Image (tube, rainbow, N blue to C red; front, top):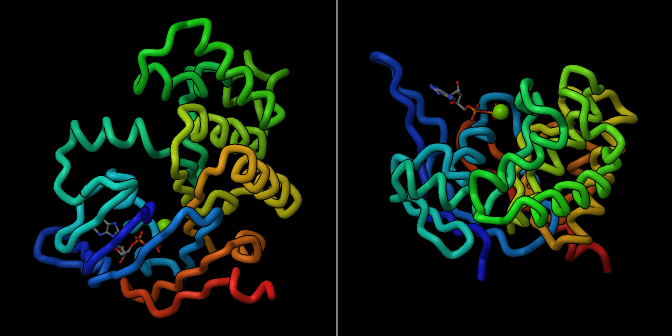
Length: 233
Ligand code: ADP
Ligand code: MG
C-alpha cells in the first residue's frame, strides 16, 4: 500500500480578488520509503503540499489518499482525528507550546488522540525523551532550552503516538550547521528504530543528501522525481 497517493491535486488560494494557484495538478505516490524530500524555491508550494498531506487544509481539486484513507473529502473533525492517529509534524519554528514543559509538550498528542492511561503515557513520553536525549530536561519550559533541543522535543512529540508518517516542514532552517546535522541524525535513527516515513520540505542539502526520494517543485508543479535507491548499486 502507498502511504500517499496524489491524483491531479490542485490548490488555489483566493485572497480578495487575487487567485493564487499554489499547486497545479500534482501526481505522485509515496511508498514506505524512509526519507522523502520535496525541494524547490520559496513559494513553489512545498508547505501547501505538506499541509494537504497532513489534513491541515483540503485540496481544491483532485484526490489525495494518505495511509489508505481518502483525505480530500474529510471534514475538519474527521481530519483532525485522522491526523492525530496517523501523522506527526515537525515545523521550522518548532511550534512547542510555551506554557507546557518539555514532558507535557511530548505528552500532548497522547492526551488528544488516545485513551491511554496515565502510567502508560508517562512511560511512553519518558521513553521518547530518552531516545531524543532530552530526558534530563523534562521539567524545563521551551523558553529555557536551545533551538536544537526544542527541535529534539518536537521530534519526540511528532513520534510519541507512533504515526506512520512524519511531515517535517524545513525542520533545519532555524538551526546552525552542527545542530542541523544532529537533528537529521536523530530523525534518521528514529526512522530506522520506528520504521517511520519522513516527508520533508527543505532547501537543506544535508537533508536532501539523506533522502531516498527527492521531488522537485517549481511554481506549483512537480518537475522532477529522483529515486536515490536505484543508484546505490
Ligand atoms: P513554499 O513552502 O514552497 O515556500 P508555499 O506553499 O508556502 O510555498 O506557497 C505557495 C504559493 O501559495 C505562494 O505563492 C504563496 O504566496 C501562496 N500561499 C501560501 N499560503 C497562502 C495562503 N494562506 N493564502 C494565500 N496564498 C498563499
Ligand atoms: Mg514553506
